[in-house]
Image (cartoon, rainbow, N blue to C red; front, side, top):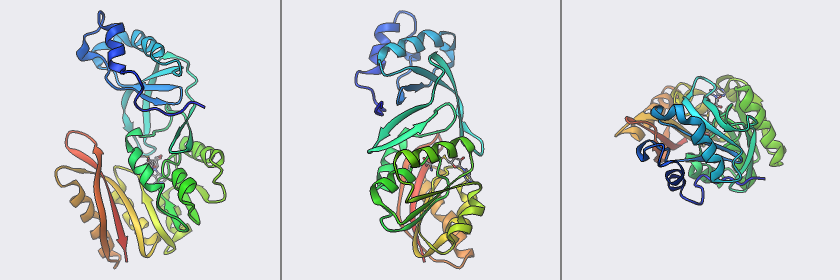
Length: 285
Ligand SMILES: C[S@@+](CC[C@H](N)C(=O)[O-])C[C@H]1O[C@@H](n2cnc3c(N)ncnc32)[C@H](O)[C@@H]1O
């Protein structure tokens, strides 16, 4: 199995500079490479799109583990949070496998998203949930579900996902990490399924949708037993991103006659020039 390595050993940029410096100015060379097993993903400056192939072939030479080089063509979008990429060099067989925090993830980066930048949050989630009833409303391929199931051993995790491709890899990752006895997967709309399977019964609800999570707060809250914890992810404008997200949850809780206590709030990463991706841990009584 290829192991995951988000920052390759040799300096990627220096390598490209040495190989391509006579063809492409430094300022236009990609500076960062993301590795998912044998698949490398990068973003190319629009000014060098005509040289995609030569860049791609050079990236293949950078590390013998890389079999496919993909370029991001557009941001992740739509209700299924789908990535937009194209193969610029190497194999079109882009299904791959990598490991992180002693978990195995099968994925096709052409079809489903996996934000390597959220690694610290996945590690944090892997330490929570022991013996608990957990709902992962927007499970993806199991980014939070798998580490939590592998390392914290909850009583049950209800992992909900509506994108058929993501659901396929979620099920595969449940099997390959041997957590079938802990994780129950549900394909469909979390707004309907979450309250259906866990109303008033959950100790913890993960809301890792990112962008638009606000419209699902009520369904997340109603799953929680008094004292349960919501992990609320949202994109909010700077500089008060955490405070704005907190207000969204407080408002919804008030309408449901529930009290909230903010346990923790932090910026996970900058999302764009105006907004941050934040996560709030909120106790709901
Ligand atoms: C941004 S991905 C995040 C995956 C993972 N939670 C993480 O934080 O890395 C969000 C996932 O939620 C799924 N999703 C969005 N709305 C949903 C809904 N109403 N019901 C079920 N899944 C949904 C999308 O298909 C996507 O796979």
